[in-house]
Amino acid sequence: MRKPKFQCPTGMHDILPEEQKYYKKIYDIVSDIADFYGFGKIDTPILEETELFSKGVGLATDIVKKQMYSLKTKGGDFLSLRPEWTAPVVRAYIENGMQNLPQPLKLWYFGPCYRYERPQANRYRQFWQFGFEVLGEKSPVIDAQIIQIFYNILRELKLKNLIVEVNSIGDSNCRPYYKKLLANYFRTREASLCVDCKKRLRENVLRILDCKGEKCQPIKAEAPQILDHLCEECHLHFKEVLEFLDEIEIPYNLNPYLVRGLDYYTKTVFEIFSGSSEKKESSRIALAGGGRYDKLVKLLGGKETSACGAAIGIERIINLMKSQQIKQGDKETETQIFLAQLGGLSKRKSLKLLEDFRKAKIRVAESFGRDSLKAQLSRADKIGARYALILGQKESLEEMIIIRNMKSGKQEIVKLNRVVAEMRKKLKK
Image (cartoon, rainbow, N blue to C red; front, side):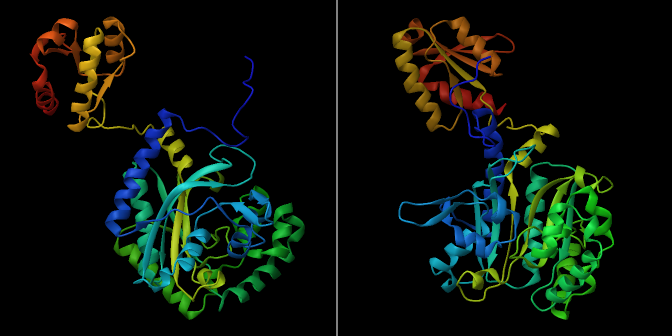
């Protein structure tokens, strides 16, 4: 088959109507939970100053070094397509004076991000994320609540085999000493590290702990653990996070090698996976990730502000929902009525009738462009409609309409001005 002249850019994809129901399902659940917990929605521009990410996310991170879509404008500005949401949300928080509002400030978002990386299963160059951020609160209860929110969203989406992994990566008081310790350990084993980790050893040694390559796993497993080197404040903070998680009965595993890939994290970090905890790390699917970032607001020009948040890649969730055969659409949202019509007068009356059903919030399907009753009823059967409403020329003149039960084939005739109320009663049965 000949390829079309124009195609989606590599690593990007169309979201077709069949896929949209998944996005809607996720959006509705996320929106409901955000409302319950008091989060306000925020949208930021897709383009931001490149320095926002190089400064906030970190120059040595894969995102900044390899994955950003950057451009120079005609005016000489350097801009990048948003590769993640946290830095833009913090920029908006500072720029719009949100630090002067009652704290903590709770924000959530839902939209596309862009990363130039090798397209593969569940990884796209344009991908969608949703996330939650809490700014202006240092209590460890917020760390636990963020984990709880994401765990609950995934549970409400009926995803199975969820694994929560948590760690603390300390702060500026204890992390420098640990990084020194780690660097000394990996230097003695540098020859056995993968090519990327040899670079990470010079640029950001913590990133070696994030390596998924088989070659580095046995070396990583013997590395010093940060939990043994936390300062008193970080140790106490993490202890309280775990106590809160125990209290709300969120099952979790301690993973001393979990660091996350971004420079702005401090103290608590976490990830939620799907898969068996007995399986290899590479066979699990990472769904959600986040943690605390107490230094980022100040780093980007604001006042020192404690903060915590996380995000989820939406395409990964959808692929998992499909693989776990989680059905979309319940009986209430399925179209159970099909409106068939014959002739010009019937078409005109059907347009008015369809509007009456819309006002009554009752979903009705139709094929107004078709005149064949057989073709229309075939369409009604295909979408699984319980009832077909048939409006012919005779019925239109008499202000009547036929209700056909698609399963039994039984028909009845009712007044046109009574059909909406009649169908409401039938659908409740």
